[in-house]
Image 1 (cartoon, one colour):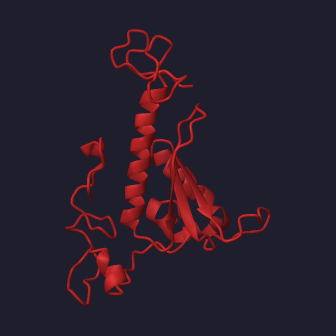
Image 2: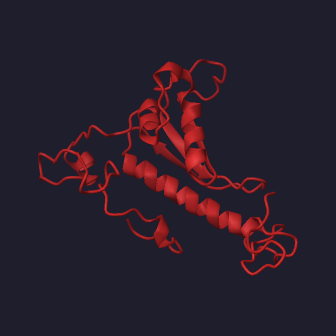
Image 3: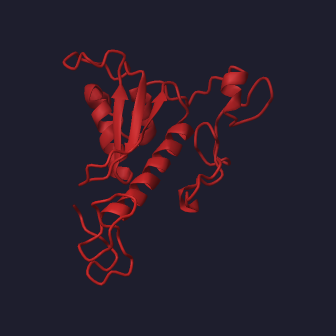
Length: 192
C-alpha cells in the first residue's frame, strides 16, 4: 500500500495477503492458475481468480468482522455496524440497497449492492467523506478502508475536541484543537 500524505506508519498493515488480509505466512488463498502468484489482487480482474474469501454479502462481511449470528440474520447489518464502531475509533457504517426509497420494505441481509464507511466525529456537525465499496470486495480492501476511517477520525478528534483553554482549530473553525501541553485538560481534550 502506498502511504498517503501524513498517514502515520501505525496504520499500516504488517506483511499480509492483499486479498484476505491475513499474515502472509498464514494465508490460505489459492494460487492463481494463470501466473502462480498468491495474494495478488490483480489476478481477480486479470485472470478471473475467484478467491473463497471474497466478501459478497452482508453475511460474509459479518463473518469477517466477527458479528455473524445465524439466529439474528435480519439484524446482521446492524450488528456489523456496531462491531465496526466498537472496534474502530468512531466509524459510521451503512449498507446500500438497490432501492433506497423503500425504507419500510424488509431487506434481506444479502440484498445490499455495496457498503459505505466514513469517519464519525462524535459531538460535532462536521461531515466526513464516505467511501463506498461495492460487492464483491476483498477483506483486505475493507480493512484498508476501516484503517483510513480510523485515521480520519483520530486526526479530526485532535482538531475538534480541545477544552476551552486549548487553541482554536485552524482546520475546523469554531472548534478547539487538542493542545498536548494544555494544563487544563492535560492534552486529553474533552468529550463534546
